[in-house]
Amino acid sequence: MDVYKLLGLKSGSSSEDRTSVLTFVQDAILAATFFIGTVVTIAFLYCGWLFIMSATDDSTKRSNAIKGMKNSAIGMFLVMASYMIVRLIQYLASGG
Image (tube, rainbow, N blue to C red; front, side):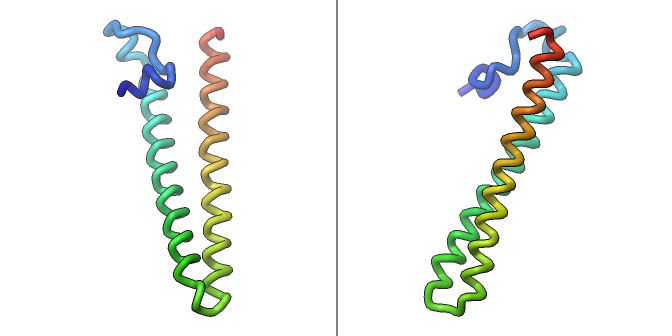
């Protein structure tokens, strides 16, 4: 599976296209987005596990787990929104 083709990040395969600054920025943003998205997903799953395990415990752990899941969801929204904004700027800058 070619992630670049799937997301439409690279238009050609010439050596000039592969070494451009725009391609480097796209690669860096894509790597950071995938990394942060993975961390946020793991945090969400961990907080979900804490929520399940807190069913028999006190309500403090349960409220902390719910708070963590809400923060993870907000974090994922911010990551997706920032990625969309960067892609929009790149699209507009390329003359799209």
